[in-house]
Length: 253
Ligand SMILES: NC(=O)c1ccc[n+]([C@@H]2O[C@H](COP(=O)([O-])OP(=O)(O)OC[C@H]3O[C@@H](n4cnc5c(N)ncnc54)[C@H](OP(=O)(O)O)[C@@H]3O)[C@@H](O)[C@H]2O)c1
Image (cartoon, rainbow, N blue to C red; front, top):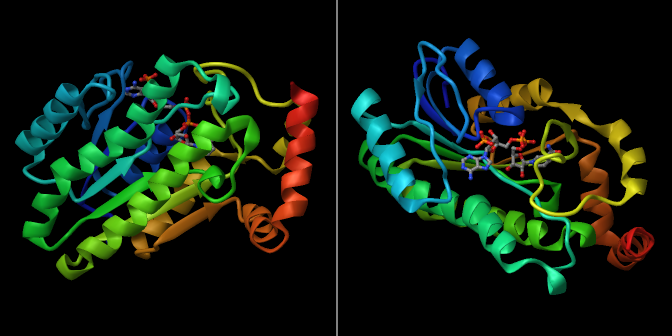
């Protein structure tokens, strides 16, 4: 999809990947609606602060954006949060919060946006998943479950709406240098994972890859590309990868 003059709504735009995406899409000529709980005014963009775990706020966000711009061409579901707790011990309120933000908010925002896109035979939904959409990380089991759900949702949404000319794209970042780790709801990752951070990418580099993916109507963006090695290992030698992951998780407990 051409980015110039398109109306893009970006969630989680106050920091990290969402903030970098706003800068990248703005530079490529998009008109932006930005949201997060703590976002500050940024002319000329429309800013709609609020908590995406609230269905009422989600409706207000879409109504305000449509009242301002008249349409939404690109919906980018980026806001998300993590939780480092074993699934069988995880705090119920934290699990529900994470699923509400990572899964139910993107589904609801798409439900509020896609009918208008279908009428205009024009639009794209971009869901920010993770390498954890492809590979289950045992120190991050329920976070992985939310990101797997987002992958199925994205693929199904694309097939459901291909007849109306819409596109849906899943983004699977590896480790990105943002405040994501500080913002997790509970827990911390295994220390050994620190060595994997040498493969980390930056939010501006990922934002460029996402914008290129939008411009080329891609189904999926996996960045950095080194992540494909892990995905290939998970598909071809799953028991080996499981043993490595089990050891990492065991040493962590
Ligand atoms: N960083 C990584 O290594 C990595 C890797 C793979 C995937 N991801 C995914 O990338 C996305 C962005 O993460 P990030 O790395 O940019 O993390 P981040 O810096 O923590 O940004 C998260 C964004 O979500 C917003 N947010 C959090 N809770 C919210 C709520 N209840 N209502 C509305 N907005 C809320 C935050 O803004 P406020 O706090 O102001 O509300 C912030 O703008 C997430 O979906 C994450 O799962 C990240």
